[in-house]
Length: 99
Image (cartoon, rainbow, N blue to C red):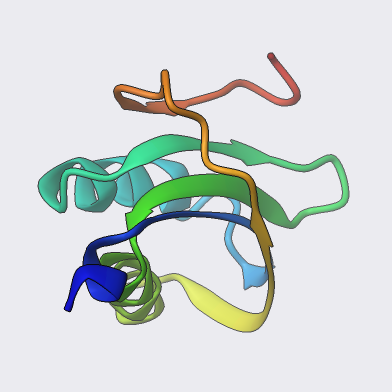
């Protein structure tokens, strides 16, 4: 059971119709509702990028909820587990590469 609550961080590249459809705002709203931390941004090539941190089950739930959003059409998810950031405290929207 403790493993399910372990803090995990994913770096995700999202392909499909994810720009100009409210994807970043939906990701932020849903992630905050699940008490996840991280950020979301658009990429210059039309994809979106996010880093999200929290229990793995909630990370999966976030991606499922994003797939079901109106107007969003996800065709591919590239997910890579990365090292969690202990000081991450919120989920935010970045503006095209802002750090």
